[in-house]
Length: 639
Image (tube, rainbow, N blue to C red):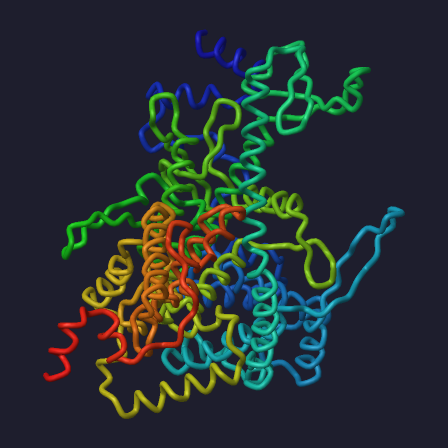
């Protein structure tokens, strides 16, 4: 009776009808292997067997249906569930079911030339039905993007049967037949080049506007948090103002949980109220859009890897050379079934800390939630996931579709447009391409970028780059091939632990007393450590007083040199003026406010220094005569 009463109270407050299952699960009524959520019993979830995949398409010829099932069962150990389902769709629906629809009674894989040609012609296009604004349906025919890859799948099916027939003639021999798809028709190089050019243009278009999206999402997050905080301080039935907005917090007839509502006052004097705004949801949307954008752009991980980040993903590594603790982010195996570690930058650490502060409960614990994998169609065990939100009284893992919605809202609020003037769209994988492109542009070696991105082969990493034209890439690849032919093969391998430590140590050695050196990895210092004059110096704002002291000291030395006539050729005081065009002075201008920049440009002596008229440079003997007493100068002439 207590459970039923709690269920009634929960349903009345939040509309959640599944609280009873969680209560019984936490009470230990169910077995230990019982799912942690009742949503695991939802119809339509779970993996289908190979036979169920093929039976979705209602194939009439039973021998062919059994052949497709046997073929997929042979290939199942080497494929993940998503790939297996895609192959079953191509072979079962797009290939054989299409043949049965247009050629009833067909029962052989040995297709006549006209039948094969007609099928390939039909497969090049697809027909979709859309609804027009007036309510009528319209059929639209468009090219099928996956036509060539589908042809390659059918050709691989025939080639597998031919190879297996040589190994087991009794089982596969009766089905061996010439492939209706030639090697030229299955060649995807031309299609891949077109797709690569399209993706490169997409990356080049979005790379420059990424800082605008980042600043807009940050601004939306801070503004939504400020409005929500002001609304919580205001009493129901009162008007409050924040960030130039005048809002009214209404008095609700019934409790609505933790949500905070507000209304905009269109005319404050007459108190005309606009539609209600869910400030809690606005803050929720703005925060998670910002969090997703920041994590994606700093790590370059996939969207499914983002949703699987947990509290356990943060680990520490102690450098054996300096003993310094380096934070690392462990990426769980996803597409390539291989985990990897990513260095956590200070910016990424700040984002992850804010996420953990948001998902922790009142006891400081990140709740463990069960997440559904839409690709493998299985429920993962409960984990303290970082990307989770509360629905009713239950914590749930965020679905990739939910994050896509939040990302679209952030793009709409930023007001970004593409080259055609249409609203700019971005997919989570765009951040991955931008991350790899930006990393290689800034000096990261491609084989290191391959490890960071989690690619099995470097060709995949090179395909993500959108910075070089095709001719440059081909010339560089040819140069590498020629060099590999003349040098030992041991040099072209996966980096060792020592090489990886050297790469990480580069970032430790970049730190200077007045800032950071922005040199790329494995490049020498071109200024022989004259850091004040080097354009690669990035001054630290905290070292501003020291830079000002250096500037004032140089100004005084130049003034003294001018006053004493020391500005002869080769003097070090002449080179001192180079400081005012160097990186430190330029960086100092970025640290100071605009009104404080102009005073820094003075190169004349201070007010308390005596000014002298300009003189011509003195010779060495004239300078000695001017500097030493007369009796010493006379003695010096004889030496």
